[in-house]
Image 1: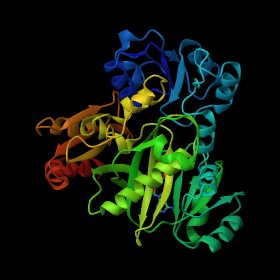
Image 2: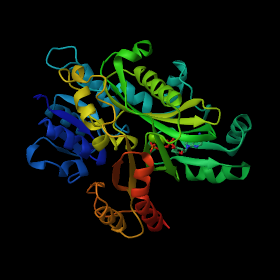
Image 3: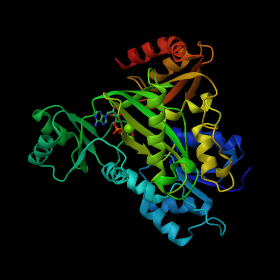
Image 4: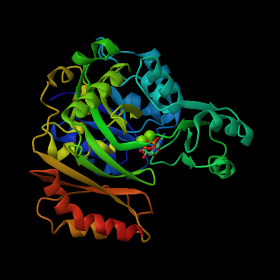
Length: 406
Ligand code: ATP
Ligand code: MG
Ligand code: MG
């Protein structure tokens, strides 16, 4: 299909599902992560190009780059300095005008600092929750910021955040000291609390390298607008399509997500998280420059999965083959449930095994070994003729997940 070797910074579950999609197209993938990382367990025999090391270490990234043609990511917490240097050395693929790093390291650098990401979006008129950088770890500075934003507010780490590890809700002045203690030594910003009706997400595929928000319609495609349920800042469930959301709002979410993604250079898939406010207005929470938890359902529920979309969008001959319609649902509805680690190293297997008895439940286990509370160990997708049919089928598993957690 394509002889270019794709290098991926990071080899967790997203990388694993990316390798699965690539192997169907017989495209070779080289993963940079520790030995036996989830992504390295798939089709291992077909790849002699994996690199043992860290996506945060310059020399390891360099080694990966020497073994592949196009570089991409499954995590945004990578060393962008080395990517900038690699681009200076050899910017394009085979003398073409196709960048070897997709999406651009500039996109990743902007996105990996959530406060800079918000400033970028604001510059393009994309609405976000009001945010103020917290320049000092002295409680007085945050008190003054809280006076401006009001309580509650969300104190957030600007960098290295995932699964809510980096968030601290500040409900009153008495939370300020514990919040600063919990996020000690991390660069911080404060975000106005979003009193949302619902959290939505839209996966977007960008097939053109250029960034132009005005050309968003020709350069991006959107997957359906889905509803995400978070517990303790970790995604728990995804409902497809979002329940009780009008066509107009669902369309507005897709268009906003597409415009936001069009403002970033490079190609690939992007996960756009949104808050639907009480007045039906939408704001962007954050953007991931890679496949995303809210898009796992696309593997079984859409014509082209987010992982296939990522592989195709970053390769010059395959990107133009991604046409409108590819991101549509192939079934009426789906629900995705995350399986998190519990108190025992194998608690998560209880849920996965129970899913075996539900006809049609699609079980994904990530091969991470022993579970830990809150760690994403796998997920289950159920397809159906309506969301409520999927809900009925998945209900016993949700009860089990809740019991494991309790
Ligand atoms: P991810 O795993 O999605 O990358 P993250 O650690 O980057 O997570 P956020 O997406 O910023 O964290 O926040 C996680 C969750 O916390 C959100 O999905 C939402 O439920 C809640 N949250 C975040 N910001 C706010 C806010 N300003 N107001 C209310 N709730 C918020
Ligand atoms: Mg995040
Ligand atoms: Mg998030």
